[in-house]
Length: 311
Length: 324
Image 1: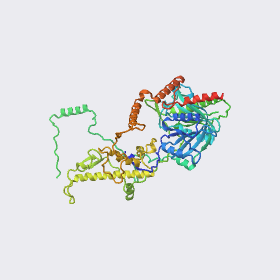
Image 2 (image 1 turned 180 degrees about the horizontal axis):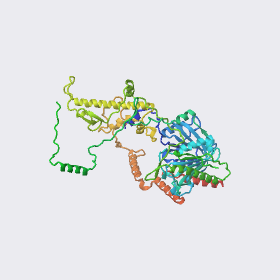
Image 3 (image 1 turned 60 degrees about the horizontal axis):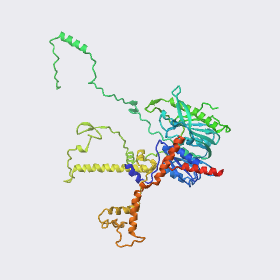
Image 4 (image 1 turned 135 degrees about the vertical axis):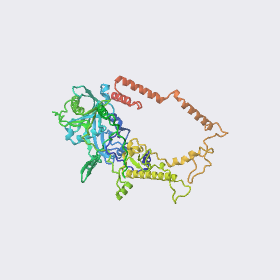
């Protein structure tokens, strides 16, 4: 297409986005050292978000999200893969089983939250009926429990990021039979959140609304919030901008006149006068004709009048 | 205790219970998990109540509801698209005060005296319909006026196309490409599977001419060379003949040649002998399947990945023994 040729000629293409954005992609990668727990966490998150995430398998030694120089690699990867969410796992003595979940705006770091994973139970360790297993890509329910999510800054931030990570796409039409998963996050202390993923079973109840039953399918883990980095106000304002509603809906066939005020045009469909069905007053006509005929048998139909040329 | 004042965000299918307290960390983990799931169930039920009471339309897969927009605002991932800069024509029209008028689909054709459509089959003012063109004083004899008209029209169409591309380039410079053009261009990073246009290197370009010249009978020896073009790397034809008289020692060329041929033949048929890689893969797959059947749960591993888990298990076993 001509667009292709155009793209190759443009060197400094600035990738600004759409008015209304579709789903964000996630980049999953790890740092210098990982533990087995962290590896399973990363793979399971990847499986939960199979369709819109990219997982890097190699180590990345030069990524330190919280340091000022250490995020250039991340931003580069985010640009290359067009992912605006990332999950970065690393393991060290000081911060064991460390997971940094972050977002980018315009391929620059927007915000970060660092959590430690404890008491991790993988999907394989849960036994459940195979039929309940949630489908890949289904829209998930979210249940956030605990006042901590409202009162503690870090937990508020974590709530927003978890929502962003797992909420999938914003759809308008939702098929109610395809609802099969829920993420339950409970704030058990001011810095710990118990996170688990459950499958939904809809049971018959008396009303239209089915009774919900949750079956844990995993993964489940305790997230201990370690550090977090909020965006500055100006960046936040810019990122939260909503596209201004374009031209208001035009009212068709309505004009405003200075003298007469509001005028509307009404279009009437064609009146097919010729083929309209006549009221079938056959009897009346017949009788008249009959009577006329009877009265005046000699009368013939009126003769054709010729056009009079006006002189 | 929990009140039923949940904050529900239907667009995100989210329910938030801000009143629940979990002060007791003393309770065992199982209790905690159970309580969390219980509470979770209540919240999900609340969302489902609201959800299922929305007006729904029946589809073949199930009832479809129209979800409201999510109430929790999440930040964008890319900046808003910038408005397009006005094109040359738009600037000119603004200056002159030319208004845009919407054209009707039908126009009155003077020639036939009927209403014809403006574009498409049997249109108004079609070039084909002109039967006679009167000769002007400036016309040279021998020129075909119909062909002239067609050429002019083609020139106009090409100019318009060039201007359109120019406008797109200007818009792209600012970052305001219309979205359908963005999507169409597959070389852009927007698709995620970025296929960067392969830049042909200088060496490759130099080799291209050489490659083409081998198609000639004399191997490109007598081809006219462009100024600055270097002679091709592999000048002669591609056959190599062994010297007529030669010893049969270690560096014997004939021995090397026959060895090469023999190796090629054997490697071609080595699949009959044993393909080690394939055997390993088959073994791993079998093992996976066996384990799958034994434990009876879905294996999340793809068949192509090597069986890392088993290795780790064995190492753990070894280490635990050592510890004891």
